[in-house]
Length: 231
Image (tube, rainbow, N blue to C red):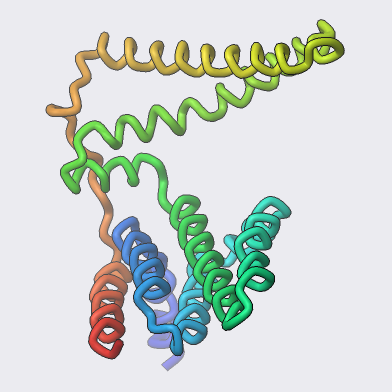
């Protein structure tokens, strides 16, 4: 008896209960479709269900969306209906707030759970040739763009560019950042061209399909179908 229990526990540890890229994609589109297609009278329950699913698979997403900039954005979306719409303004504000939180949580969870290579592979398999490469270039460009922007800002401050003619200094800073971004993008494009890269001949990276993906995808489709039919 003890050996059988130990064998079952070992088997459960070997089974990966985390979703793969297909499962994360199913959760992402399911959350967006559910919160957008749900009737108004069932929006609160639908949003709570989406947030519970997000809490199960993306528990750290709630910590990231509670940052100040997201809270300010939420306030800018929710407060105008409360003060500008006299009738049912509170209900409209609640709908906007719930949809915003669910969409933001789904986007944050998906982008942090799925690697950029896997996202590029998904896009390539969907027939969007070259978009995966463009996405990789954009994400590769962000760290270098942030570093070059910081260096340009520090250089401008050290040379006193903001003491007089501040607007001119800010315009020069924006031009410098854009120029550095374009130069970096051109370097990546020339490097890809020198290696004979072509969007028409590239092969998408293989996508692993995990056991949980085979459950999440049909469950998401059935739930969406029930939501659409019961509107």
